[in-house]
Image 1: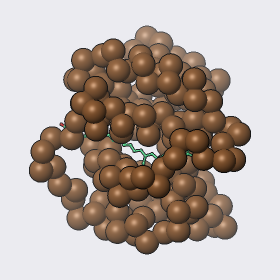
Image 2 (image 1 turned 90 degrees about the horizontal axis):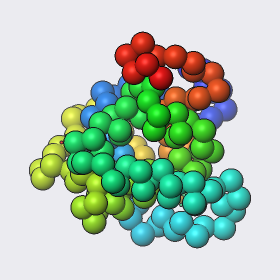
Image 3 (image 1 turned 45 degrees about the vertical axis):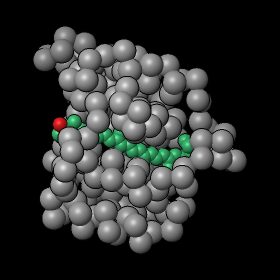
Length: 166
Ligand code: 45D
């Protein structure tokens, strides 16, 4: 994957994506906890966001068992080719972000598999969390869009996967 040097968050994106799958999920969770109330789904300028699409995908995941919910999220991060990851791949980056936000809210309310109590980030992930905390809000959003954008599978370019048969 190539990133333009004019994007100040590109190094952070690469560092994020270089963590192992579970550390990426855990880091993203801690980021959500840090951002807390500053995320407002009704934010102005949300022109490319499709709340009903994000909600539809979220509802599919919500119906699954906790183990399956975790698997879906791991599949998204690791670009595994499944029905859900392909649906995800068809969303705009901002809608992807909204979908992750809905998952995090679901974790808060226990409809989505919660973080194991006392789960700790490794040093590299913790380091990244500190750097992310230091970014301006706008740069954080840009970073997250760049992180969630390449997750899942682009259904227009990926045709077949031996392991899933999809
Ligand atoms: O057992 O323009 C481990 C909108 C392993 C509006 C685990 C927006 C062990 C329009 C993997 C740790 C609101 C969209 C378990 C803008 C184990 C708009 C599980 C902004 C169980 C800008 C870990 C949106 C798991 C924003 C399941 C800023 C971790 C959205 C899951 C930000 C982590 C969203 C999740 C963020 C993290 C979402 C789901 C930061 C989600 C984070």
